[in-house]
Amino acid sequence: MLKPLLFVSTIVLFGITAASAPGPEPQKAAPASASDQKNSIKSAEKSQARAKELYGQDCAICHGNTGDGKTDLAKDMGVTLGDWTDSKTLAGKQEQELFDAIRNGKGKMPPEAVGRAKDDEVRSLIHYIRSLAKLQPVAAPETPAAPVVPVAPVAPPATN
Ligand code: HEC
Image (tube, rainbow, N blue to C red; front, side, top):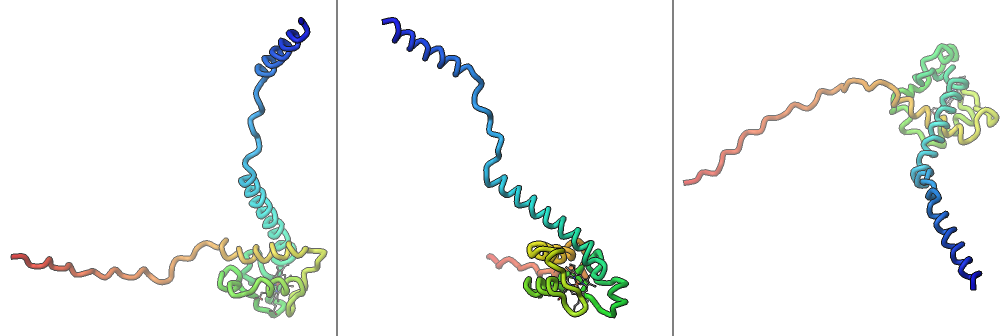
């Protein structure tokens, strides 16, 4: 009759040891949605950094660092390039149209080879050149604010 008793006390002892052990590690990982969001922001930042780098290497020589297209090379080529610092320049252009121009070349513009920029890098470039307009300092508004028209006070209804 001693064995079962020993068995029980072993369990009790073990239980106490387990209970006194440090609790489970506090969760380190943030909730999945938050970390996913962080990752996608990170990868967007990364692809824009890559686009900026590519732009500087392959595009700025003609289109200019700011994207205004006023470069010596453009002048020497006798071409007038769109000013991308004005958001209106690219606003009406379809993604595909810009993609084809970059990938296949257009007029005097050489194509951006697949070996230089993969398709998603070209899409990042498009995102980047569209963002150039937003990087410009905001110009002062051209039209003054509408004058405030004074409203004649309404006379209260006469009471007797
Ligand atoms: C050798 C000079 C040159 C280089 C380098 C160059 N471009 Fe161009 N780009 C041009 C010219 C010229 C045009 C105008 C083509 C036309 O309309 O005939 C043009 C047009 C474009 C257009 C079309 C805009 C529109 O209004 O349709 C986009 C987009 C563009 N370039 C993006 C880029 C990007 C991105 C790069 C770098 C990967 C780049 N270009 C490199 C000369 C250049």
